[in-house]
Length: 245
Image (cartoon, rainbow, N blue to C red):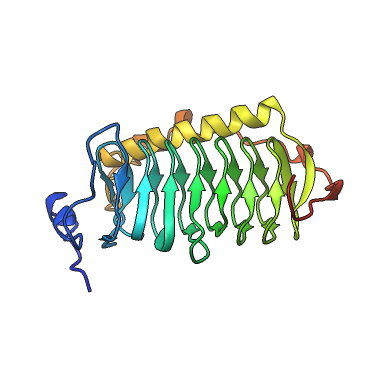
């Protein structure tokens, strides 16, 4: 078992705890490649790997590459142990997300993707600018086109091809409607604000609360994205089948 770093110490022991040394290419503005190394996990802090933010409690194993600005939150599991996982720029991978893939089938995630809490992404590709909603499931060999929205709790079945710019919802996932400009704007805001929120964590904006110190400034409303109104959600209108879109 890899040693766990002491949260009270600097970032150096965390890099030293990696099986074969620190991640490659951790210069700011470049991707971080974990390859055969394992991120050791640990506490709740976010660590800045040259502009890529990874929570100590995240587990990253195998052939994994994270692009600049990507933020990996507590209790995420990213396992590139059966095929490579490539994550683009400014991707928000929120708490308890699982990224994995089928043996020999790489997982590719584009830029500016938002993956909500507790989502399971076990597919072939998620296109840039896509929102993967809280608790959704994207299964083996599925492909999500660019600029899509996968609604919270949706299950995208194996082999499904979702065309670009579509909202899908339900179990199994069905096409709801085309993505609108307000949806694209919302996803872009969330992706950008999570980069800023991660930087705020790294800068000490969320110190441990001792019962008396004031709430951190990060709780101010400036970073919070607006949510779409509940009235925007309607019943899915048609099946989303397998095969090429």
